[in-house]
Length: 315
Ligand SMILES: Cc1ncc(COP(=O)(O)O)c(C=O)c1O
Image (tube, rainbow, N blue to C red; front, side):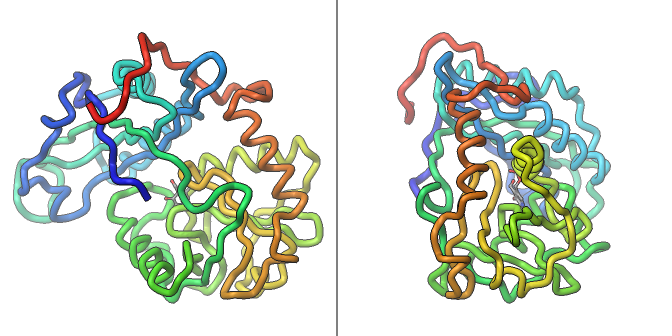
């Protein structure tokens, strides 16, 4: 993947500051104890300009994650959505990835997080494809690492600390020559990838794990479920045994980073015929049609960003 490309400004607690000034102290609580919650959002390029995909839903999930961890965020959902618009609009860099972040800053040493101040940031930067091209399909494995067990770290919260588990899954997969790993939950049922939700197609039905199987409530997952209903593709949220991966007709990952990425093999067993199946293609056509502005935004998922001019990156 390409190295991080900086933009001009970062939104910090309601004000735009220079990219290079957005630094934190090494004794900030988050550095030692992983006390952050965050979002990953995409801003697409549609014919009328930049547009953020499901801005409200992403910020709502950020506030939900913060609530689980007793973080009082001093901004409303609307203010944070405006913060994203302001950041992208000011930097003039799109398409891009947007990273809203809430963290515990510099205050007190020790595990108790309650006396460290809440810091809120919104960052945006250019970012392309994540796992593979949407036309290619990726080769994945089942991870030897288990996803977060219930009553350990809450999977519904998108917390920085959860991604230590994701890193183990990802590194193992890469070291063994795969692009991604699929983790099972604490009971051995399919959960999700290190940073994506998982969908299987079996006998013309779309199957995905319910939230009880330690999955993040993905915004893309939700979008795919809505589009599938409209395409009259039956969707079931059910516990999925591992072996379903090997007998599925089709499989794909969904996520802000992965968008809709087909899976062509699992543990070196081809998924279906090893190419992209018709249901995956139908879902991709809808999803990419909407986010590229080629199809009507009939769900109102895109928020236009007011901008002055497009800027070169790396300023
Ligand atoms: C662990 C995990 N699961 C699923 C997803 C997909 O969620 P979304 O579609 O909201 O990006 C992500 C990415 O944010 C993730 O990190």
